[in-house]
Image (cartoon, rainbow, N blue to C red):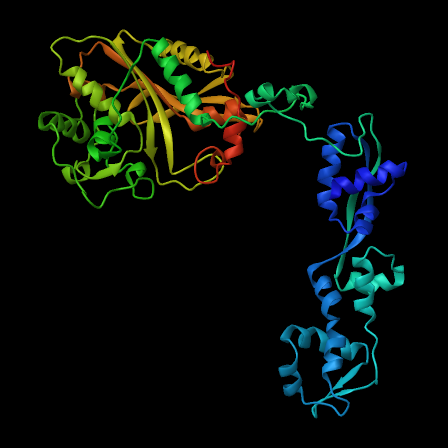
Length: 489
């Protein structure tokens, strides 16, 4: 109907100047008309020029008043000439009408509401509000002073309206034939393919987006870091146990039992099972001796070491516990062989969540165990490792760790935050940690650990860790992040 109306009108007229007025006069919904116009324009049957004009539209409340009348007039009409009690009036009209209508009716001096009841103050009321709203609904012009009350009562809103002016196009026809999209066997057999009009192919049309999965930036950087470790000759450590004993998480690392990190404010301890079942007793005895009275040239910590503290189960606070297990296993071999180990997995700490900290995050750890290693070797490995990661701006700061000496904090410059951000710790494992395991005295271990989240934030310019990992991650960030990063080799 809409298409026939447009083509029929243009057959006898030069143009349709306003599609909005045309739709209203023809009794056609303008949205339907607009779809037809776009189709005809696409086939060059008509030339269509868009225009925009602003006009007033009724809000939902305004539509109700245009249909049923303003609440004040509805309330006035519900009041008999001789008056009515307030309670009876409330029963006669809608609660919303009573609430809004009584206020406006009193304000406009249409009724009087007193203790004795409600009475009329005038004999007749013309519902001008309903009239103005009906005029606006029809697209008619309403005087600016009459619009003032409608605007104040928020019954109308000013919105842009898109319309079209139409003329005959280069391929105008009074009746459009339906274009065929395919040449079928039946067309060939009948021979009517000679008279068919075929729809032209639009080779510039956008195809349907391909639905694919997207890698999270953390996984991309994890894969890149794993590739770097493998390129540097490292082998992966097994990290499939989130639950660890305090012995391997703390004591084996020469961390005293009164250390603040072992407090429940910093560590998640398990209630069930609360303690470990088995530890290597000969190794436990050596660790006990080193803590209590010292050995291997160390004075120890000079305190009474408690087995029940070492037996407590916890969610591991670092993957260095796995490193301790691997080094102990290496020390039990008949002959020593140098090793390069790495791990990338989750750790848990009872920390306050903020822009750069989470209670659950990923730790990257690397270590080299060999004879004759020095601090210079550690510097060289770290610079090589982070350069491959695309983080060339590094700084090192002396630090303290119970199980490394010397120890260094690693800082990298964050372009988004415009400051140096700590990305990890490093150092050389202490003899008090290595020698009780049974490793030769001339063997040293250089090691470093860093979170997976912070390098990812630096590489992807993310300034809030909660936008990278956790329930607040925006899927569009994952969907639109770069396919690869040229900084990662």
